Amino acid sequence: MQCPIPPQSPPPTPTPTCPQLVHSLSILPAADTGRRLRAQQCQLPAQPGCSLHAAALGRMRHHTIHLFRKGLRLHDNPALLAALQSSEVVYPVYILDRAFMTSVMHIGALRWHFLLQSLEDLRSSLCQLGSCLLVIQGEYESVVRDHVQKWNITQVTLDEEMEPFYKEMEANIRGLGEELGFEVLSLMGHSLYNTQRILELNGGTPPLTYKRFLRILALLGDPEVPVRNLTAEDFQRCSPPELGLAERYGVPLPTDLKIPPESISPWRGGESEGLHRLEQHLADQGWVASFTKPKTIPNSLLPSTTGLSPYFSMGCLSVRSFFYRLSNIYAQAKHHSLPPVSLQGQLLWREFFYTVASATPNFTKMAGNPICLQIRWYEDAERLHRWKTAQTGFPWIDAIMTQLRQEGWIHHLARHAAACFLTRGDLWISWEEGMKVFEELLLDADYSINAGNWMWLSASAFFHQYTRIFCPVRFGRRTDPEGEYIRKYLPILKNFPSKYIYEPWTASEEEQKQAGCIIGRDYPFPMVDHKEASDHNLQLMKQVREEQYRTAQLTRDDADDPMEMKLKRDLSEENLPKTKAARMTEQA
Image 1 (cartoon, one colour):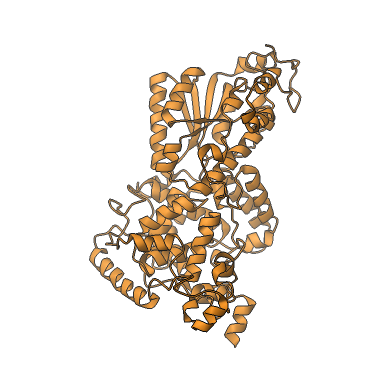
Image 2 (cartoon, one colour; image 1 turned 135 degrees about the horizontal axis):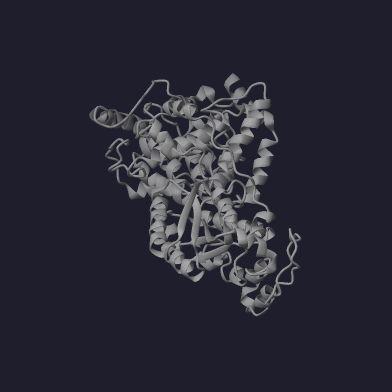
């Protein structure tokens, strides 16, 4: 059936819906009403072969599947742009391999919601440009094989990713390409720099300090500039997927995947939401220019950092676009902060871990990891469970873990405190166990950054000032002496006077009754004596380092490396921002 759009160039926007699509929707069962409405919003232009595309077909060559993985956006998407510029027809596809995402990526319920919201937002954006998103469920390679043959595909485009499982996935797709006769094009879009080039400039090995990493970046210069945003004209130059595919391969509902509806984070996924948050933060150019990460507040009820990390992790926002927006603001400011504590410094810290992870075998494990101290951590399932479920008996730590479970996000200093408590600070449990919990619960869980931070904070790699430990009482009290953060996330403790809110076990029995919370019955006693545990663990860490320091592959270029100096600042009580109440407490 010929699509009733007159042959003109460019075609009108928005493009009228083809009657075939409307007909295909009208015969759907009532149970699919939600999907029907979403598919109706996809204003698909003419089918392949419509005279609208005649001129374009003469110039284009490929039938292309563009595989979205983490680059769930239309701005600065070089692989998708390349697909549109080289193809007769482009199928925008996201493969939802539930087994892979559960067993390999360890996606928890909150991140599932965030992902589905991001896919729905991407679907809506593609519809507005005259295309659609096809979410196909199944095993990754099987889906590619089946649809390459079904759609006569000659090219697959995708973002280049650094994780070993994504590298293996790309290698397998390339193998399919050799077998079935299609080309594979992967382009860098999730990082600022080509990590392979950084490794080459460092003699083929990863730089293990931030300071050395910055020296190499100085040789490379600024990152590549972002590619232009995609427009309706880009999609009109090639044909959209066949009619009916938008409905057949819609974004599943959370109930379809048996994801509990109560596990919805206040952070909404998607490129649109990410761009909105980005503009809100960049509007305050003074804050952007003066941002200094250690001076943000760990127990702020609202993020005192940008809070954009979930959107970068999922690829809803482009890190290159953010980098250059920051550069423009810095250029106009009289003074601005510098790496490692500036906003650009945080992006480079992300690149640092990406680079090290890309060339370090077993990066997410202790065994077989050449940069990681080999430590005989305790195996204690009960203690691990109490930490994970906010039952440590230390209100600040439990409030942190409660916020993490409820919202999927916590401040970076809160992450530091929780990680230190689990590992070298108090419980002496392996950083691998904590990494797995964060991987499941964090919206911004990232293979390289998550593992790198856990090694760093457990003093297993990167950071060597192991004598500096977060106190689970004093550190939170410094910035929130009234305990508002604890009262929000642990309402069982909300009626305790401020002097007891961080140590409710020190309140008398009568004071506990007045607060409506008996320690040991309504809220647990502390699971350890912090001073005894931390002193004991310091001795254990000292022994480990004395035994292994000469043989472990730990590199320190300088004693004043910015990575170490940064954590020293994080751990320095004198450097924490002080609230008015905190200053009054000190003066008293």
